[in-house]
Image (cartoon, rainbow over all chains, first blue to last red; front, top):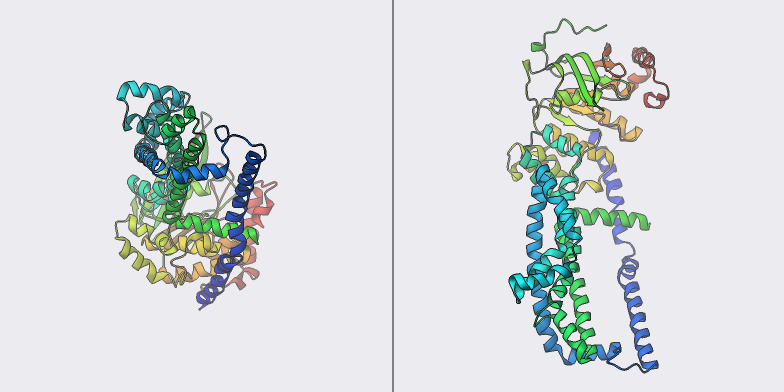
Length: 287
Length: 271
């Protein structure tokens, strides 16, 4: 009897912290997350348009937002063609970087000696600018998709590996001991505790990697390509097709944001406990 | 002082004989436990109290198999236990619930580790959620629960593994005073129902006396058994006993012994 009574009071307490708050002021929340940044962007674009019109700046020097928008519409099939190329490079590279880094990070988390052997090399590799390696790749693997994909793999590889390894290593010793007293074997601790602990770290790395992959694709195209948005920006400038160059940049930015948002969405679906815990905390702070 | 000498380790549920534990510390061996004898018989609640750093938790870790004694032997169920890991239930001061698992899945974790299917393990956990005051919360994640509920979920996880020995390392230490005393009574209810053998570590002399059949008091480091006190209070107990004799004299005895250990500046711990 005693137990049942206690439960019902605690139920009220427990849910009171989360549910009524979640329903409160959704409009305010929407405003904070979307309306404010959107207004900032709108003001910036308006200023840009005003400056170009007011000082009569020629379009080949600095195109107005309106002429960039116009170019995007008029040459949409051209943009679309090059967007697919860049997006394909980024996605192939991202996938390979992702799989490769998970394997390497897992191996490093399991073996101290492997970590000691690999880690300094990884750090050292970060001091070599990709822009130096990219032209060499042309010599080694030729033109085409391959050298671009390799650059895309190289750029986000490091943040991914470090994040995943840190995640696998971040399990509290108390947690591991708890599993051991339950009789868990090494692989069970890995599968049931280490992997889920590492997932938020993996997604942090993946969000960085998603935006980096676009940068990687551009670098790859910059040193030698015949298609892609990086190629388009580069080839448009000498022809004074500045609006086209800017249009490509706009698409690149959207691609980066889009990939980031997709990763964030997958994270939210895959880790509901984390999203809800954060949200509950944020809402409590709002109050 | 000890009354344990007469009992053979083969007759006890848990027995420790001549336990010593050294830790390597800055190149030297630091002795944490010295010549500790301890026993608990089937269905007893035995508590270990002592000043901070006296090796209370190390003692539990040895019984759980997380650490090996430098000297001495451990007996479980009347036999010398070489690899006790996984043979006893262990509950920490922190609930150590996995944040990505619901209450039910957390409770079922031990059974899953033992090789039960997820569905089967969940079904077994579900049978006991009401008894553990978790009914209606099975699908919640731990962050949404109060401290007391989280601790009960962790407790359910330990109980479900079916081990008849439970080690509790300051299980209520992180809870507020009211929740704590509710949890103590709840623990006694549960113990009456499940008849586990419980070894409890606590800072709280009152908690130790209220729950236990026997209290071991350890000295400051290196921990030795300074005093063994048999708590002769009728069961079931309610919180009224704490203001009456003989509880008061027991408490005075334990507190006096603790003070002798030179606890300057740690008064707040003993209350």
